[in-house]
Image (cartoon, rainbow, N blue to C red; front, side, top):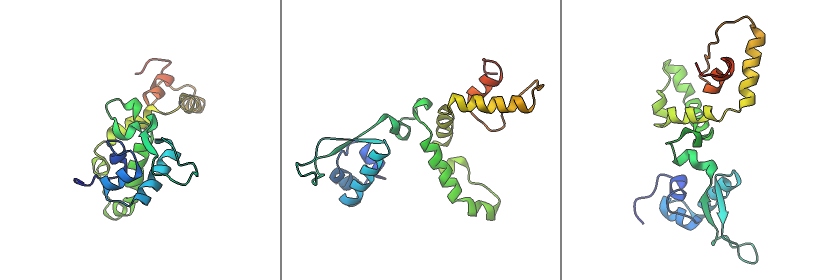
Amino acid sequence: MGRPRDGVLEAVTTDAETPAEVADETGVTERAARIVLEAMAELGYLEAVGGRAADGDDRTDIRYEITNRALGFVAKADVRSVGPVPHALDCVDRWIRLPETMKSGEPPAPEATSEDWTTNFVGAMATVDDAAVRASVTAAVHRNPDAERVLDAGGGPGSSRRSSSGGGST
């Protein structure tokens, strides 16, 4: 075994396919690897392939493959493939650091949370449902129907700007 990988996700998205291989790559127990892989499959980030023994108890021959839903953890070139989960994890990390921020008065730099923070944020914004965007814009228009301009202070998706400007992003 070479250098242990940083984690189960890195191992299973590169070359480890079974709980035993993930355990070997990461230094965790095979049981821990199996539990994490099964949870990731249940959440739709991995797909279990292969089969079980006839009695259904032997899980050693199950292999796991990454699904499209997990692309945001490994493919950052196209923000449309990132999805909302990496950004949500970045936010959780910042919430965990909230007591420190409250004491110091200085929030951590986004890059301190994740080197992919900006990509993760943009990827999450790209997944905002068009119906949610339309509902937000409609509520704003109803609140102030005579407004000549709209300020998107929340940093939302470009679809908010397109919706509020009548089609073209401004």
